[in-house]
Length: 138
Length: 101
Figure (spheres, rainbow over the protein chains, first blue to last red):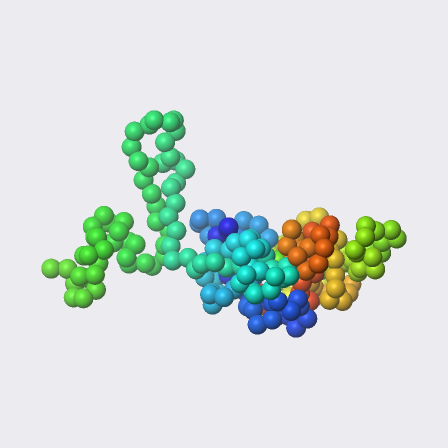
């Protein structure tokens, strides 16, 4: 499975019959910072992922054949999820030796996500988030 | 599935049983730079090695196709077939809006 960003779609009239009606998305594999990593991959999509959205794509052909409902389909790559946010441990924060004390600190990479920035500030639980939605914390 | 430009054809004289008379295309896979050009054949070949692809859709030289690599390529066949790349899509149009990072 790869983290990828949707960068377009493909239109094709003549294709294997199992692809009829399926969206074909151009998915650019990216790293955690959003930098392109390899050549784009075209994947079938049932989730309705939009342009620039981040998705997880899987190369499991058996699952793709079940999804398209054709036992003899060559389908391989398909989107299996739309990414809300990712979390990464920066390499410099990883423990250097086994047994080193202290959990590595993490960096959240989500853009403009107020819930994530609150989490980063270290405050809330899911309960207090629910409260703030209904009227703000006391 | 990857996209690529058909840059040639292959004809086989002698084959293993099951794939006699098949069409084979030589395909130059698109890299990120090539996607910008849509249906046009890229001016230069990509740095990736070219692939020979089984074709039953009727792709021709100069066209853009989508091909599937791996074990899945032999799924459409009734009996086990030693094929690991198959043309699955003849591309009409590519809409591509990259994010430049």
